[in-house]
Structure formats: C-alpha cells, structure tokens
Image 1 (cartoon, rainbow, N blue to C red):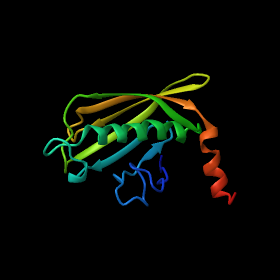
Image 2 (cartoon, one colour):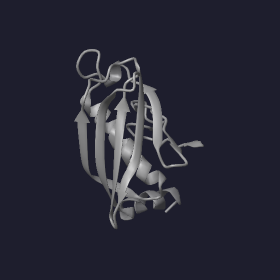
Image 3 (cartoon, helix red, strand yellow):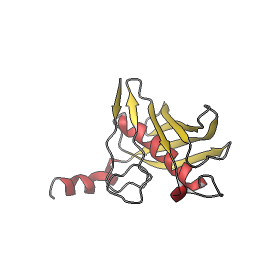
Image 4 (cartoon, rainbow, N blue to C red):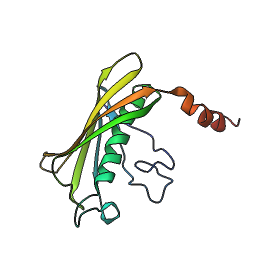
Length: 146
C-alpha cells in the first residue's frame, strides 16, 4: 500500500506554498520505496527541450533524502552523486524511485533514479545523509509556538 508524503511548504521540489516549486507529489510504499510520476515544463529547462541538470539533481536530492525521512530519520545531506545517462525531455511523463541502500550508525545511504516513459534510466544518484536532529529543533520550536 502506498501513502502520500506531505508537501513541505516552501520546498523547491515538493512545496505546495512555493509558487516556483517543481510541485512533485511523492509516495512511499510498505517496503520503504519512494515513487512519483511527474512531467517537467519550460520552467525547468536547460538545453532547449530538455530539463536543466540542476533540476534533476534537486529532484533526486529531495527523493533520496525524503525516503530516509519517511523511515523516521532526521537527516541532512553530506554528499550527493548524480549520474546523467540520457537527457530528460520536457513535457513527457517521467518516473522517480528512491530507496535506502544502507544504514550505518550515523550515516544513511540512499539511491534514486529518474526514468523516461519507456523505463530507460535517464538520471541516477546516490546520497549520504547524516543524522542531524539539532538542525530541525528551531523548526520544531517555531511550530510549537516557541
């Protein structure tokens, strides 16, 4: 069973309060795999007719980090590796998947990929995330009225 992950306010990738957000809706299943289907447009363009590499990197960063958050870890990215295999076209359906690949004492590793409509992997990535709840204490205090 899939559950939709919450939108994150002003997030560049999945924020529903940010008018410039890419606006991706993400889901996680019972096995902890994050997925999404989306289409990018001219606002995300790099080379004519194709997505900017920074947009696809941001999407993978968000997905690989969010899958770790969905597993209950408050983390921050410390390393991202993005591999571009094929250009991402604009105005065509794309799919996204991410999962945790390894959990150490303080580091959590995840992997992700963006696929074209024919299931070809266009962009893949690997992220290393470090448990860092102290970075989010101020956010928690603000939401509690402190």
